[in-house]
Structures are given as structure tokens and as C-alpha cells.
Length: 109
Length: 117
Image (tube, rainbow over the protein chains, first blue to last red):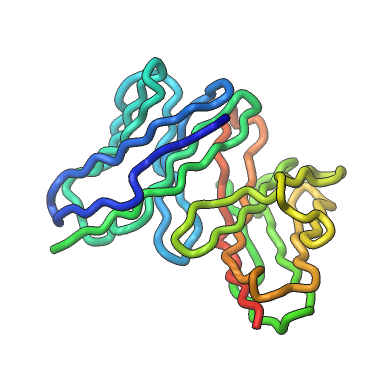
């Protein structure tokens, strides 16, 4: 079956760095997305990785290892507004998104 | 570009009534749209894939006669929750893929919060 695993909840301190991990098992693989979702709002796109390696975009970076079925989202210089849920979604062979349950990130002052 | 809108943003209705939610792609034509449901503190659950000009493809466990989907044009898909009950109260989100973009990125509408009394 297809499966995405990510931690349910994480807590970090304002100004610090946090890494949110995601492991996936899919039928075929055509990339992996990270989305941010604030409470009561729709998800917004953060990153897309299809090749191994690190993609850096400002304070946010995303890493992919296809051989390990593993990705992480790295958030630097955390701000209070980064408190949100972070959703990992892998693209399977039919180009459908397989969603993780999301990681709720709590930022403390 | 790639903006998706939803209407209404929220709706409260009585049990037994039907509710229609619209999803529009504002600056592109979407041959495929997706309908998701999200319960509190849970992730997105794909309900169905809506294809312009053809019948929607429903995920296992989603009643097609209860959740009617119509994708009549390249910019509009509608979801009608028929005979809504309190357990249908949820956050409904649509998304669309931009054709020929070369990726599977989905652009999400702002969501519709449905409360059934």
C-alpha cells in the first residue's frame, strides 16, 4: 500500500531551527511536495523536490533522498507566524498526491 | 497566476438540506479539479477527482449519490452535499492542476467550512 509518515506534532523556539521529517512508500514516485496550512485555511505551496538533494528557498529548505524514501523540511530563524501544520505529499505513478497526516508545528517565544 | 476561488467561504444549514459549493479557476483552464474534506486536526482526505466533461472519480468510501460533482466547464466544478447531516460538517477544499505545467502541483481554493445543525 501507499503510505506517508510524518510526526504529529513538534515544538520549537522562536529564532531556532526545526527539521520536519517525512518518509514515504508509494507506487512509483514523481516527486514530493511540502505545503503549509494555517488553521482554518487551505494549504499553500512551499516546495517540490523530484531529484535527490537540498533545495533552498529563503528560510525554508527541503531535502529529498529517493533511495531512502525520505524527505525533510528545514525551517530556519523561526518566527511565530511559522506556527502551522506542514503537509508532506508524494506523487505516485499516476501523478496523484498521496498526503501525510501533517505535522503541527508550535513555535514558543 | 494559478488562482482558485471557492464559494461560499462558510455555510450553516439545517439537517436534511442540500448545499452547493463552487470551485473556480480564475486565470487558467482546469481540466482536472480535486475535492478534499478535512476534519479538525486531520489531514486532507481526497473525496473525488473531477474531470471536465465526464463523470467524477470517487475515492473508496465516498458516496457518489450524496456528494454530487459536476465539472461542466474548464473553469468551474461544483460539489453538492445532498441531504446534509451533522457528520458532514467539515472543511471542504478544492484544488486544480495547471495543465501543461509539467508538475503535479495543485493550487488550492480557500476552502468552505460547512456546519450542519
